[in-house]
Length: 215
Image 1 (cartoon, rainbow, N blue to C red):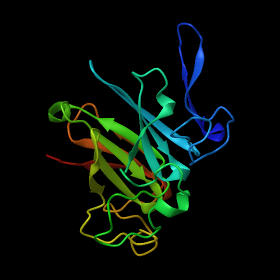
Image 2 (cartoon, helix red, strand yellow; image 1 turned 30 degrees about the vertical axis):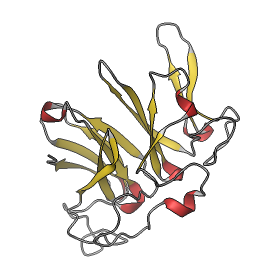
Image 3 (cartoon, helix red, strand yellow; image 1 turned 60 degrees about the vertical axis):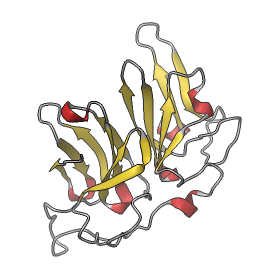
């Protein structure tokens, strides 16, 4: 519920709808308020990881430049959350303090996001025991990967991290390159082929397909 800065859960069988995350006041927030440790500011995407022992929800908290992980097995998941990247975007800080720059250069700290808009969990094949959280780092023009159990373990998946990302990542300034992303907004996994994901490459007006490998 982006404009109301919250996440709702709707039970199809009973018709009941309840708030899972966000403030009761429907106001945006980045500070601890109303007893909520992880308020949201313009959330744009949500994905869930469910196993026999885990029930986790990841929310792209876009205007706070972070992704939050909520434990849905607890009675009140909105009381606390883990932050991706870890240690960046601690509740109570102004969002301007912790989001990354609009232009990234080679070697920049991977633990910074800039208005991420999409996320998904990949747990197919060899990744079933250690699923990966992919984040469309929209205003940094890249795709990031985090271990779902460790917000500190991160890797830039696309484009190739050895190349600097320009402020306007286009080929010759006229057409998109296959090696770049420009304001990616969403990411989904290909459930038919292992190690393949699709990215909504928004400003390039296309869908990009990427292969990855992370051991």
